[in-house]
Image (cartoon, rainbow, N blue to C red; front, side, top):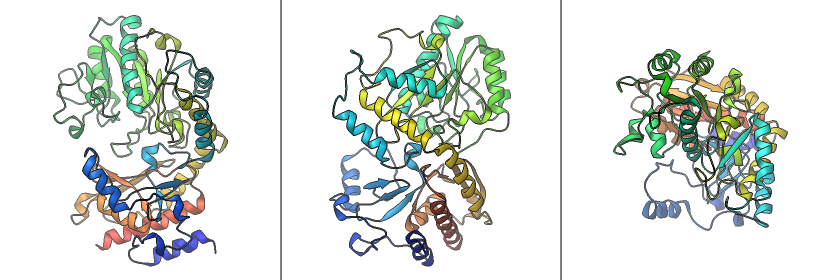
Length: 454
């Protein structure tokens, strides 16, 4: 019997897996002590709480090391990572080829700014545009920077090409969206937690009908159609997540995205796909929009574009759209820097050469099929590729929340995080293999049993 299955048996045979100190761990679960931080989990949490802004609510676990689908805490306890840094480490934690590419580039040139050319940017731009089938790319750093770039780009195109009167361009999005935390991104949002006491918001951007009373609902193309019939001559773009991640891994209904694309074309509106979380193999395809065979006017990438080792994002589009922005009108000191370029090219090659899209589709099907759904508190288990979710029915949970199930799974050796109190996103690195996914299915089902018995 393999070492991995021995670990499974030991973890799953007990009612509750207790996180043990490093010195007491089996050699199967710990690595050389020198590989871990010289700090305890308790101290790390204490320092963050004392000196860091309280703008996140982390699951109570501290991470110190990662490799493939695994992470370890400072005491050497190993976990499966089923969040993947919100899909930033699709290729696996600390993928050696990606890390080596970043380190090697850092030895020769780290940053040139865009005041000068560098010898990596052009080759990266050629590679990424050809890989995704676009003509031009505007390189940025973070996902929300890519979103803000798309907002500016679509407005500029609307004035220069479509002929929208100056300062009257509108950018629409469906309800339930998440495009980041910047002012522009939360102006698109309908999430009150994101918007509370941060107004006034950017005008002419959002998810509402012109009267401001009704939302443009996700999966309801008729809502967008009605709005475009009213003000389509002034609409620059419609930005949509092909799969809504923060909303709870919400998938588009059959035909929704195709209908949206048709409406955008009919009204000369740019169709923007935010693939920052859903793209790069997460759903079993290169891009989630590929499920519908669509080619948006603008595609936004980030997160796993670097394999999670460096901030890299990209805005892909046509020359007609991209060249409306002139020199000096938009940019970033770090955007397109040599380290980012070398890292992103390698990360995309890993995605392709290691067939991670195909593996995502196969492992995701196994995961969805293997999770025990025979509980009153489970409303739905859904997924596409390795973008999956368990949705619980709060009315059948005896006062417990999805957070409590995440704590149980943590103690069993698997890390995940709830969204909107009742949905747990399951999104491991795409390199996870069949033996590992089967072990994780056992952990999840054991956790569901414990949750049901509490």
